[in-house]
Image (tube, rainbow, N blue to C red):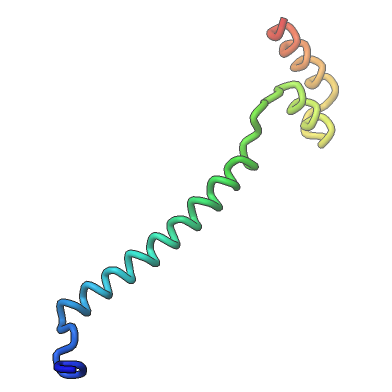
Length: 81
């Protein structure tokens, strides 16, 4: 077993191993981030946007009064037809 403990990999071999390990863990972290970002973005963005439903929610929360609600709802209904 010539050179079993004496020659080793040298600095070049250790550098290649270090870069390989950093690249591997970088890919693992990147894959986890991509997976979580894709699943989270689907929940954050609704596929169907209904302006009248948004108006109903604002009225229910008390952000707008009944007069403003009726005026905006009439505009939305007229634009829809």
